[in-house]
Image (cartoon, rainbow, N blue to C red):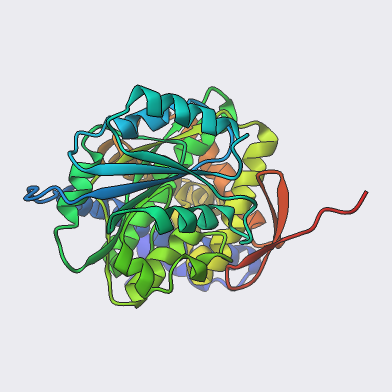
Length: 395
């Protein structure tokens, strides 16, 4: 004899009418999504248990900073790297030409911090589709140390970054460490929405992957690596054609037998005040590149979207409305653990459901199209994650 609840579940899943079948399928996916949210909570607790070991010796470190133009608060961001509480490090910067306005910022900081070894590398026009990879390769050629920290221009850190990285790399097996980031939005509404998604959905998925599979990937915008690990995977030349070069650096290093970890150090990623158009372009670029970097994982992202799924269940079968408050509670708990506890970021609870619905729309859009816009240029994506520049039409 079935109980009332069991009978209802039975009728939902085995009623062959199209509407009921759809509701049953959606409800099944929603159950998986709720389980995934619970896994995010558990994975966040597991990550919070990690502490870097005590620093025994201060190994020299080279910081590699690819630059292109004046990002918002560029000077303030770069200053935090000059002010590291660490006895042995150098900073290398790369720009295409000496006329890049970022070069003037670097020169000003070099005068302000004359005791910090630093150099500016002029790369010229990059021959690689991924210009950032070419800049990193040029800086690596002049870097003096084995331990490297590769960091984007929109990153801000506290003075203990290098101490934490050096302590973690006392493990001789470690080849790559990727730093989780706390997205700091600009003033625009679209920027705040995107930061909400980064600080909840994205890192929720990352800590679950870490718990279930181990780290077999890396995530920009700050990655630390041994020079030997980069050489073992084929050097930067191997990733020059990939849009998501950060992801494949971790993947290739792991395949070469080097350890990859999610660092215990959380950086700040200042994403600026994007307009609607800039936000759409960035999200489509992210979605389309992710679909090609991890095709199966991209499809599986559906399970990271409990709120849109709950709304679809209620639309298909209003009798299942109780799943909505349950979903909201579980979703809020997972968002809190990842954003507030792991990343120590504030959550805008009003924006969270909007971002959830918008993120679902961009996930769907990511299945279509194979072109992206990046720094004013258009690129074509290939199925294996590589990309190429689409030449501008002749005038």
